[in-house]
Image (cartoon, rainbow, N blue to C red; front, side, top):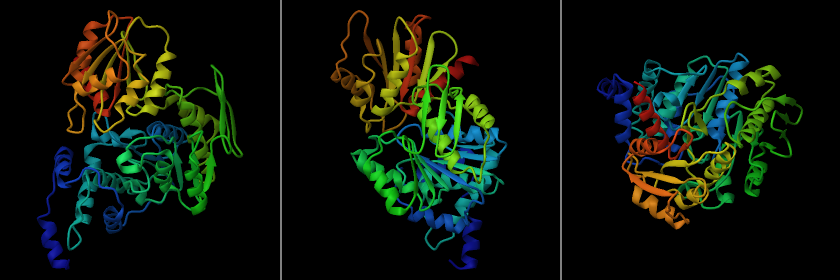
Length: 444
């Protein structure tokens, strides 16, 4: 596009004065919600001149990505570094996707970078179409690049090889776990999915895998490209008892560590992968034993086996695939005795819902199934059919009810349960977000 034509076009280019208006526009601007590939976003990245002057961690995996990002972030912050962290999806506010120095960014910080991405994508003869995730990821990256940071942490949205964050060459790539999810995009075997996730590895750079049983395809892909592969059980591991745990890496040992503030049995796997990543980057970003202890003690991440204070006990967990549901069931078993457990559950129709429920059917007495505010969701009737298919039967101590929304399901469960019982809210991010919003509204 010639300079004069570009100037005229940009003068009338759509722009918005609020973040909510930008997000509403982006939800309808690209006809396909998920459009895998890096060609389009790569062109806009080049037009932006996007590059990071600091080390970048990219974190992928089926489950545990958000927790691992939060642990790396918390330890680096404890060490005094300026850190940017991009995670997704959000629960209550889009701004949760971008943190700078541990603080969720304000709308005003984001707006100039949304405008920069819009200008860049319209600088071609034919404007480049970007999905909601691609556009917002670029805007957040652009903000990070301009923020004088010491480290950037990027969570993979879907898969790895073709995910938007993979337009950046990671200085250290982490894969937390590999299991079956998003089969329509990634394949239906762990071997196939591992190849997609290994797409975030780079030649000569640390590639940390926290899965205790990595598929051979992941190892082969790392070797093929010449990545510096760190495997759990070979290059790093942990040992622990009920009081404390210890990390051992290639050349670093950290004994007598307190458990991470994040609850759940899998958090030691996530924490050890985070420590391996930091060990692999110790020349650029050294951290002390005290930094690690402080980071582990202060790390926070809503919606990951989050036990809300008060009675009845309320557990919030975004477990939406069988691997995550198995971990949630295990964690519930470790909570002690509750007379009855109530569940609020909603899920996307394209998930392995029976696989999820199979791990939870014997953990819950009273089910409150709900629809969700998105066309992708399974309705409550379909969820009940799946629940019955995995063996649920009603009797005097077991029941099932259908609700239109997570808010309605939680209100019904709260009305029926006793103060010594517990309510487990799990499934889609929409399920947990709906209940979080409802609880917040009741406090005001």
